[in-house]
Length: 173
Image (cartoon, rainbow, N blue to C red; front, side, top):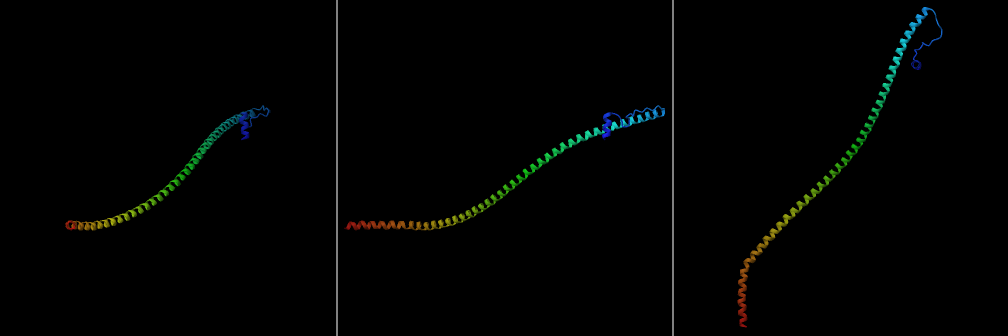
């Protein structure tokens, strides 16, 4: 490639440099003219090839830069995804902790509810027993009250008789 660059910069094909020797023969002039045309044609092809290589090189360089930008963007996205993934993992762990706390609270609430229900049933049973005792007491009191009601007229008559006797007794003395 250095030789090609030199030729491209001087705009002369290789081998076209003149030696300074002149041939006067017709054959050598025709040969030189044929060779020169062929060399010029090859030099043109070489120039075109170099231009195509330069264009391809520039295209490759631009494509490489584009790929570097894309790679950088992909790396940034990857970094963002990893960051989001880390945040999501932390959120999942937090939700799992909250769920565990809720389960524990639910279990404690169930235990408290069972205790309340047991206390309620115990109090209900005690209330029923107390109501039964009260009813028996009321029944026995009502028996006493009934007996007293039956005996009140008897006592009234008895006190009436006693008063009469008392007044007669005091009247004699």
